[in-house]
Image (tube, rainbow, N blue to C red; front, top):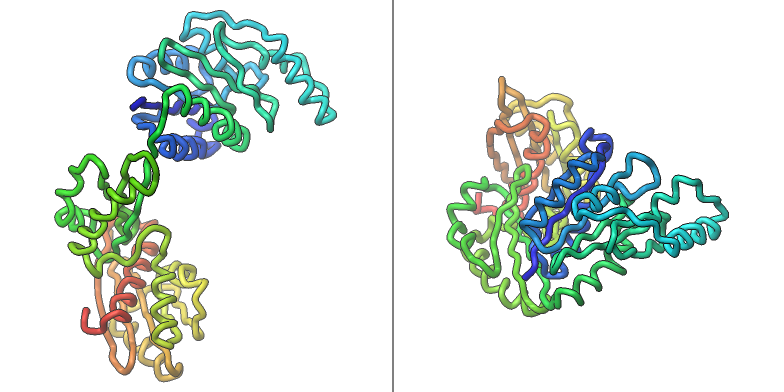
Length: 385
């Protein structure tokens, strides 16, 4: 199976002035083609460094896709860099220049002289029409290997990649497989804990199993390569069932399901409404529950003690009928946060404490996820806590 690399080009990316969204889009497209993506590189608008990156990539991989540097200005060096890497001259393409002029005319604009730069391609390269912009893309072959250069403007890149490049790659490399992914969501456990339980599955080759840590949540991603998605799922689902058996209630959902959606469904099935007391979390929990009707939520700017949180939850329960009350507080102590959770449901108060010592900016998100998971567990089985 051919392998691929992505090279995103633009000094503005290295300076942090612009976010690279192209790599993610291209990676998804390559996955759908069944191609193995082994490396991505970000490089500035420097022809020598781009050329060197191309030469190095050609030694490792079969398909190189670049984005950026195809505009009309002096600091758009991709065409010259590819020519340099391949030992070719830039050659003016009269028919390509005609296409560029016609596109400008359709937009009732006049191309400037520097737009002519876009009609030059490395010797042997083949132009790829850009139906939604003025910067032509192109491809060049090096034996059985392919270099594809796409514009950096996301909408232009996406259109050319899907409509022109993907069919070309599928035909040239006889691609008849696809990569299919399935994601399981775990809350209330750390990454090392999950790894202890499913670590042996992470050695599988098809499907592969990997862990991705978020604030308060671990995703288990299963990926299979097969001729179609149905066949891939036949490989994935037995492993999913195995993981369900090992992690049980720690899995709150799969695929696109969110923790908030799980909470909403549990409340609906129980015929309950939700009250909220949040303290020291900057509204993060209230934001997470924006799609769930809340009964008169209460917010405190600073964190409060476990006793104060429990008392506030009790007092809310006395005022709100047929409600489960969720309370969460984050108190900063030196370099860590003490997290307190309280749930009052059907006359019973349950309390839980955790500490958090990670990045302070993620503390509220971490606390919100754990609070929702604590509520989820109690709604499923009050005896589970």
